[in-house]
Length: 50
Image (cartoon, rainbow, N blue to C red; front, side, top):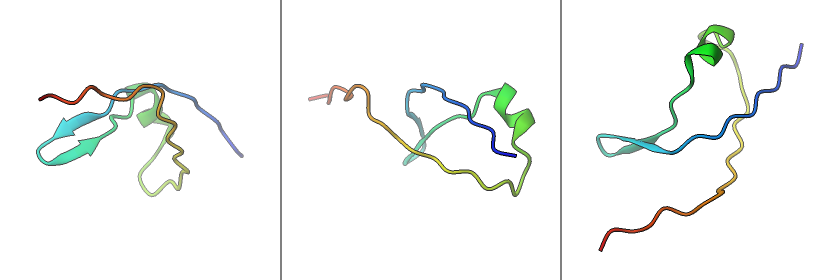
């Protein structure tokens, strides 16, 4: 069964990696080993420090 969720998130930083944190309500729906498709649409560019 195909389930579709749309969320808007800011990219977070974890060490040297940029990450997207999955909200807890989705973590309950997405069990380990679940295959998902992730599509990223940039809505607003981050301002560069400098």
